[in-house]
Each structure stands twice: as C-alpha cells, then as structure tokens.
Image 1 (cartoon, rainbow, N blue to C red):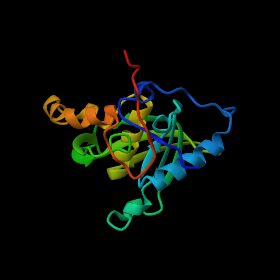
Image 2: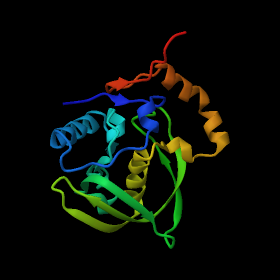
Image 3: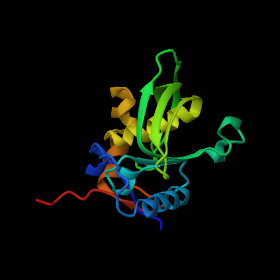
Length: 189
C-alpha cells in the first residue's frame, strides 16, 4: 500500500526515532508499504519517519542508478536499527541531494565517502560492512531522518536562507507532488 510522504515542517521528521524490536507489530507489512511508497514516489531511499512512523527503519534501493554507477547494480537493503560510524580516512565530497520530504529543493551537501554500517535486516540477521561512495551518501541521508535531521540541515546558513521561501511553502502546503503527501497543519488561533 502506498502511504503519504510526510513533508518538511511535520514534527515526526524532527523526532529521534525509537529502536525496533522483533515484536514490533506488522513490521513486514510496514516494510512492504515503505517499498511501495518509495517506488511510487520515484525515490531511492525512504526512512520510516517519512511515512509518519518514528522508528529506526530504512529501505534503500539504488539499483536504478546501476547503469551510471555499476557498483549500485542490484543493491537494495532493509536497515533496522542502523548505526553509522564515519571512517575518518574517507574523503569528504560535496554532491547535490534532494528528498521526498522536501519536494522541489536540491542542495549540495558535504558527506564522508566512507562509513562503517551496522544493521539488522528484515530476517533479524545482524550485519556490519564498510560502505563507500554514493551508497554511503544515501545511507547517511536516510539515517539522518532517524536522528530527526533532514539534508537541508547540512547546508550553509546562507543556502538555507536562500531556500527559506520554498521551505515555508512546503510548511504551508503550497507544493505540488506527483505522490501522496501529508503536511503539518498548525492549529489556527
């Protein structure tokens, strides 16, 4: 089932997500719904807070980029309770990012090119792997959502100020998307 994407300004995107336990109700269904939602939205990654659920769960599928980046061919991952550690000897690169929760905004973001990732998959098997390149960027971007952050938090204050009107329009619901969304409607005084 395709769920609505929660947009910038909604409080769920600023909450620190909770750990997931094997007893979490209907986890397999949530994962399936997140996949459906991401594909319907033309995304390459989605975090549970983006569908309104504040738990540490991410789905990534970068296979669509495999033609230009062969190392991404066939890569899709379910990350439960992921832990990212930056590897200091990795290069830092700046590259444009966008986000389903911030439609119409793309900014250049600095991220490390090499991380150590620990996670549990949907079968409750634990993994640890050094991840490099573009996949490391995608993992960091999605895991930021679990810490209550979005990519615009990583840009300079001047760049954020230049996007202020776009951000305000998202908060006000003045944005068009080809996918279902849910914004934050503040109480009227």
